[in-house]
Image (tube, rainbow, N blue to C red):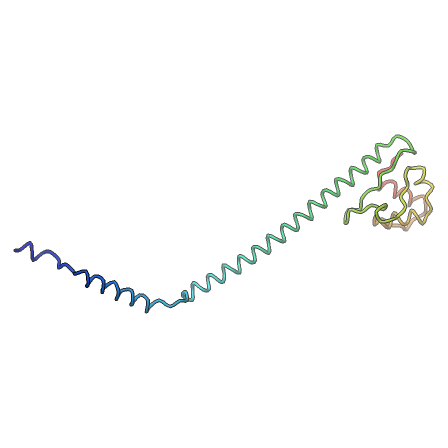
Length: 158
C-alpha cells in the first residue's frame, strides 16, 4: 500500500491530449509573427554590412582588373621597345609602341608611323609632333630634339 501511494498519478490519454492542446494555444497566443526588435535590427545591420562588402568586392575586382591590364600593357610596351632596341640596321622595322592608358598604337589611330629608322629620320615636324602628342610627350623643342625624344621613347638606338 505504501508503494502505491508513492507512485505518481497516471494521466489519462485525454488529459495528456488536452494538456498538449492548452500548451500549444498558450505558445501560439504569445508568439507574434515578427521577430523581436533587436533581432530585426541585427538582421538589418547584417544586410547592410553584406551590401557594403559586396560593393567593396566589386570595387576591388575592378581595381585588380585595371592593374592587370596596365601590367600587361607595360609588358607589351617594354617588349616592343626591346624589339626596337634589338634592330641591327637603319632599315630594320620599327614596331609601334602601345600607349599605356588605352593600349592603342599610332597605326590604329590612323597616325602615320615610320616603318624604319631611315623613314623616322626623314619625318616632317608635323608627323613627329603628331607622334609625340599621341604618346603624351612634350613637343616644345627643336626638330632634332623632338626626333631624339621620339626615338628614345620607341627604343630606337642605332
